[in-house]
Length: 210
Image (cartoon, rainbow, N blue to C red):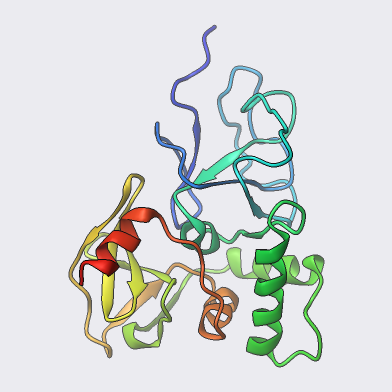
């Protein structure tokens, strides 16, 4: 039986997985295999607390997507991966992972950057809870929230509409308006502490045009 095409391995900011052609800028996993041999997903959406976001290429390694190993998940960009509850990989994205851990320590008043397992425990607990409703003005740049039935990326001076293909201009909400924060609270604190996630070129183009 032929495998489905496209595969259902593209993550939206809320962590749900969709069948979309474009793969985006990052790949990651959720600790193991989520798919059957025919390339379809089973019921599970994670296998461990370690949800990571990786580079698309690293040391020339080659993988058969949705092959014998873990299920590869693709993200539009890092802001999307962070919103979905993933963190930077300490192997292939070590510089970003160390910067993320340092900002985590600043945000949470720790004496030293946490280890990956400590971050994973907090993020896993937050992924299992309903998303927070917060004032729009409390969201730092890089955070994702819901508005007008879709996802919005908080950027300096406003917001951009998220899609699997990129970002477009969008209406923002007033600073005191309640919105559903898709990015987990612990990650929002990291963003507020100075961690700047990598954004899709469409976001950079919109920001430079302002």
